[in-house]
Image (cartoon, rainbow, N blue to C red; front, side, top):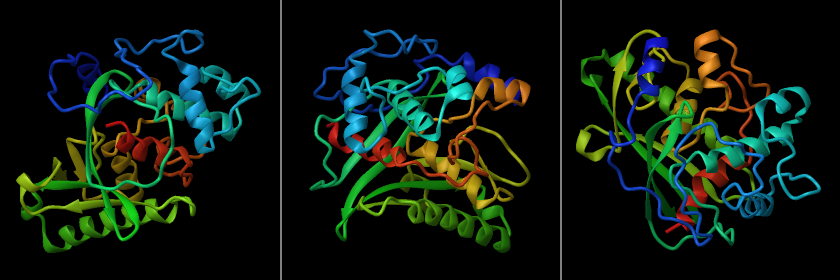
Length: 280
């Protein structure tokens, strides 16, 4: 994994070609060209507008209308769960290569919207998220799909295990959806690769390959749920580099994207995923 991390750190921005989410009405046209950004800079990409959008959605801000702490060091020392939620909600938007914070939050959409974009996996590598927002039965569904390479070579028992774990991972997301939000997550396994948004190897044994490269028959359904978060454009919340190289994740908040063993699904997950439908 350490070697893999070093390879990821060397990935060029030109290695992936995809359609990215259009800019928002706010005019936040700057691309993020490096990962070590001073988030305390008062001129940081119209940060006040982003904070306001988060506050409108229900993210707790401080008396100055911003996140209380914007460095992990201070979060680890002083932060409450609300502080962690604010920090990661803001960071996820800032670490999209092209990102948006809608001016008016609206839970309704009229038609299907294809969402394609890039976020900075491990804080550096531009890797894709791909899903469709679909209006169906009074809900807005974020739907992505997987073609598992090698799935037909698995035993019938292992194929069933994978299907059950994918289903359980999706159900975990939907059980945690805030009651006031008409949203649903859907991940489908496709029989034909041309029908799928992700083509992923299915293997036996433990793997920590990137979410779009390998999944394992032996993962728990919670690991699948965590990886689905990446496919929908959510960033890891643990300190990826330090966690990978030194085994210290430096993450104390209770959320699935911090560690698959945790049970928290903060409200901002749905904001980060579904807001993109309003950025076209």
